[in-house]
Amino acid sequence: MFAIFVVGTAGSGKSLFTGSFLEWLKAKDQNAITVNLDPGASYTPYNPDVDVRTNIDVLEIMNEYRLGPNGALVMAADQVASELDSIQEQIDELNPDYTIIDTSGQMELFAFRASGPYIAKEIVADNKIVLYMFDSIFSNNPFNYVSNMFLAAAVNNRFNLPQVHVLSKTDILPPSKVKEILDWSSRSGKLEMALESSGEATRMLLNRDVLRALGRLNLTFSLLPISSTNNGGFTNLFAVLQRIFMGGEEIIKG
Image 1 (cartoon, rainbow, N blue to C red):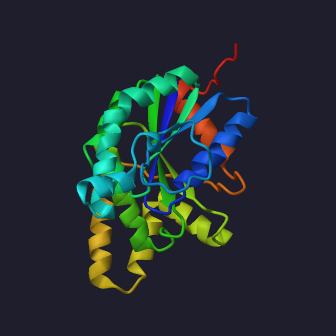
Image 2: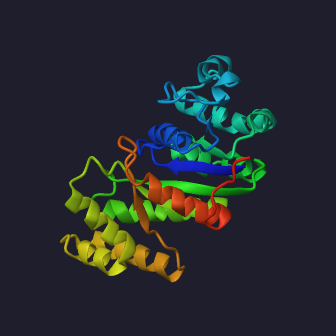
Image 3: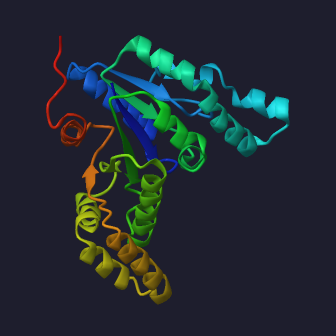
């Protein structure tokens, strides 16, 4: 079994991607399931095969512990770790080839709490990756893009797993803007030029130094453009996942 942890900022399209990529994999005769690890999700655009909301109710936590919404979400996110045995049993019963794991809408509840890396480490799988989503709307100016790079680097530091970066919702932006963001992801000089042309000297210097620091760490942020509304880029993404998981070979069906 191969596990894909879908991580990204709020609104980056994690749940929509999870549902769309599941259906795409099934159309390719791949045995795939979804796991919802967001106890605070009021709605998911797919029917999770494994769902932490079955045993964790944010409203009940609010009432029992007299917490506000944010405090209850933090407690609920931490309680997910206590459900790991049940989650693993349900996954094992379904015996999938691919498990797409939709993480908390508020990224910090999964990525920056102790429970997130613990869950990622303890879930049993032949191989695991983090799929980090760069929201194209948030990333459409160079300063926000550098911020997203910094968050992606922090996630990489937290999980220490192979990490794939995708540019989500590319169908929303004009093709010229998508190309510009992709150029930033593959050519740091282009991104520096965009920062310098902003006319904001102090902000530019800070972001340029962050960019160069990330460069010195040899971290790469090449983006795969995708659209979860029309499945754009899914073929290329699957090829990348195959190379990471199995050296480019698809799972052999019995």
